[in-house]
Image 1 (tube, rainbow, N blue to C red):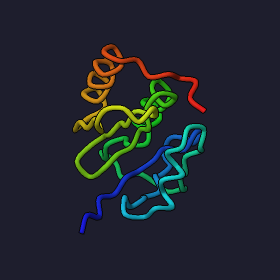
Image 2: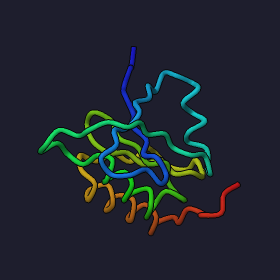
Image 3: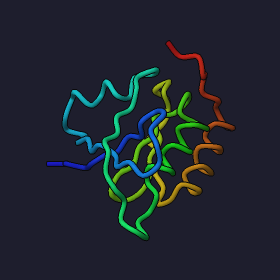
Length: 115
């Protein structure tokens, strides 16, 4: 039974806020991936030296969020094309995911005006 967790950044959320955790096996969470849907974040502190997951997700969302659904799982970061083509992209860190997204987008651009 797969219970992988995903984290979604809040649009306009401030640094230092923890992310709300969503389980992939919860169908209600799918609505969060719909184009134009907001992301949720909850208040909380970050441990010193902890990775800046929220900051990384906000960076990815800012640059690629109109074309890809951005998320984070226990093993790193993920991106899924909003047009439904292709497979989920995954990488252990933000910069690796940016390179994968750029390669995917260059090969087959995703419309940024999806309904």
